[in-house]
Amino acid sequence: MDGIKTDKLESSLLIVILDTNPVWWGKKKIAQDPMTLSHCVDCLTVLANSHLMVSHNNKLAVIAAHTDISTFLYPSSQPARPDIFKLPDDGQYEVFNSVESQLRTQLKTLIEADKAQVDYMEEQSSDSLLAGAMCMALCYIHRLEKECPIGESLTARILILKGSDDCPSQYMNFMNAVFTAQKQNVVIDACILDSESGLLQQACDITGGTYLNIPQAQGLLQYLLWVFLPDPSSRSKMALPPRAQVDYRAACFCHRNLIEIGYVCSVCLSIYCSFSPICSTCQTTFKIIGPQKLVKKKIKKP
Image (cartoon, rainbow, N blue to C red; front, top):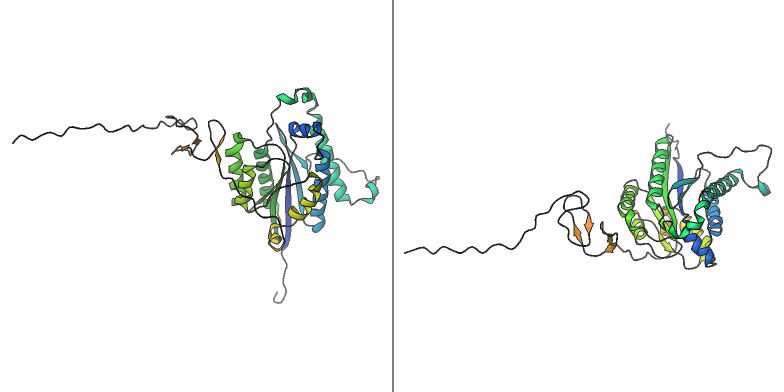
């Protein structure tokens, strides 16, 4: 009808990927570092509730990037059955109570599954399945976009809370996930809890997200609410930290080291730090062109 404007319903989806590497968190606990897993989960819970409080249409998901598995912490595949006769603690809002209870319950289950490997902590892999968690997040975003009702638009972004070091062996899977997020207009933000991450610097720069290495562990909650709570569309109006210098070095396929100059296969674009006559990825054999032989010119007889 003329003269009647229909406002399009907008919803924002925030997917938080939490690095739950037991090796890295165990080292923090031994060193009595103020950055503990419980402190990080408390700050994450406040961020999640604040995101849901901005608009009742907002959606939330939390994924744990573990050493051998990537799993959803919220929403849980098997949510606990609510007790209608029990009120939330201290009159807490039901949605907030559901987020906190599911997040802590699933995280407790994940930690208890590693209790049998506590004695072999040093033998465990120190890498987190970050690429797998990002692929799970992109699949979840794609599913919600397909299920989005007519007249509603969904904007999604991914926030990564990472503490462990980069894993060069995941470089190809990680970059494939980053370029997929760029194609789907999904912004990737990174909150680094320890050493710098060159891979996440590239991911944030490619997708237009924000990369921040927090200088103080005690101020994690303030940084989360100040930098990562606002949507990317409103960040241009805020005074945020400047963009970090991006390290665009690639990881070689032979030793998984970051290199500046290397050899690239012309067939599959694999990168190597040293020359190899056969590509180990696609088994292509390269022709080695040697120096040309000198051909003696024939002297014409008069």
